[in-house]
Image (tube, rainbow, N blue to C red; front, side):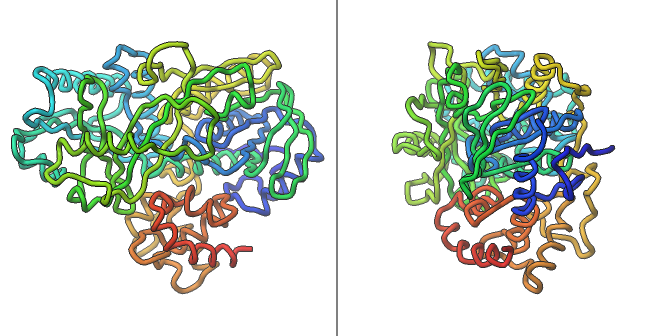
Length: 527
């Protein structure tokens, strides 16, 4: 396997390291260099996927992001890499099939170090479901298993659905209500350790193939043949010519291309301590009253947390940088999950809450929960190619379709797409992956970095010396080495990038404040 270095890679050719110095060097090269084949606007999962796909085909690519990698919707997901069961229930077989295929790609080839099988438990509790609803859920799970089989994902990775007894159900979710519990249905799906970390892995792999990955760079006056780029850190700007331009800005797509009509939907999660639910090993799946296809999930997370979500509410109006949950949404999530718990959660248990906006295509009618999650690739009157809709699980297929469109419309000299077998940084098959150092590494570090875990520790030791493996703050399972690595390898430019998008410490505001001084101290030593 070889990598392709674009003309702006210079001394960074073939390396995945994203640093402040690399950013400055590549900005200078772009300002004075020739046109690129493809300009990608947007540094979320879709934009990073488009950049990697194009560069792996041999195209020269620049990726610009006005804020930071994974700044928008890509860091607010449920972190599920799911097989499309909900879409199957509503008759959207094509979307469900695509989801199952892409889940298999992530779990078996491109990012198995970042995705793990997650048991999903639906409790069989008196009064929790209407008569016959449990049979519908069971039928849906079996249909999902058929999708898994058709996608070629092995049963050893995602076991078949089964019914378990009450004791086993409470062993998987100790906080489950015991009265009226006859057992549970258990199926398996995929879960990311961190959605933002997937974006960073994509961007770093793209950089290894020669992409100029540029955060804090705003694209303005965008047309199908280029844009004016402004470095928001210095205020300097310059025009960049491109043979094709892809708008992958998600819910902000209409700001780049006014011909795009979106209908954003807000999905909200709240964060509680895992101890409040007895440290569950499975996702508790609770039916939403009155619906046969919607559920609230209590999802085990890293750092000793559980995320409870999610909502699906219309979010009209201007697009905020960071959407905020409403009081009604928090009450809805607590009320729904409490129907299945022995001890009810209260607002006092909530350690944090966050919301993300789904970039759904406006079809003019229906509730947002009923709008299609199918993606679309559209060409605007001025030639900008926009990819929008879809969801995190299918980012790779979205990217493939966007690049295929750019290649066809602009006659770009590209090879065929092969990202379905291209391992990301940290994956076992990636060329730079290394065995864990002697003595092993913390399980949490391995889960977040995979085959790069040894490199994380080595970078921490080099830059921080003794104590690099210590937690960044008491009770927070993130090492000082990981903070240094975010700044020396992962493109983080300041403490906010580290706290909120390279680690997920910031999902609990109190944790972010406890860790901030140490993160800022480490960041100061990197300058």
